[in-house]
Length: 220
Image 1: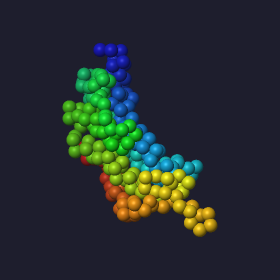
Image 2: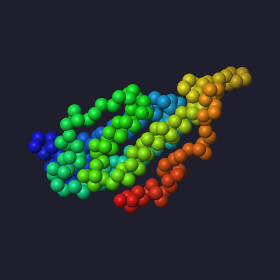
Image 3: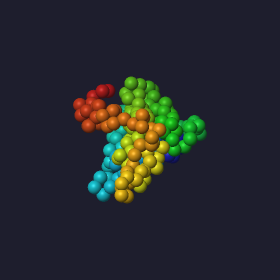
Image 4: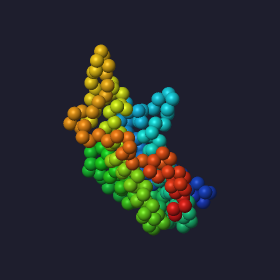
């Protein structure tokens, strides 16, 4: 047993065994990939840009909730493991870095982030470690839904994007009247734009309201 693993097991015996494990770091890394995607692809968007008055805009709030939802589930299960060998497997301390497969999608794309998260789900949330497939899939699907549905919808909400940062795949800045510049939909994308009522949302203001979000621990 190496010294790193021994130290981790000693920490676990003191009730600190769910903090900063290799698997926890991988989970956090995947949510950070999503944050990077939002920063690169929702520039100037009302729901993505931090301001002096709003340090947690809507997109960031959704990411933070999703990350907490997944991490709480992981830590809760890991904290119940008392066998040292099993704990080392379920925490990722005995996994060789070379065992993590490469992803062929282009770095920085939504497909890349989703593929990397799918690897985490496969490696971390195993039945051996007492994770329930249905509950794991709920968390994985939330990640994919945010990137493929919710944030893609945001990217097409041209009216909510700063007109001076509006040159995107779906939107373009146009000048109206005497010097008035607005962010508007590119003509070829008009048919693809949906209004706000079509949003599928998670959390307190969306499809899964407080009784689901606040009580997810009861689902186990």
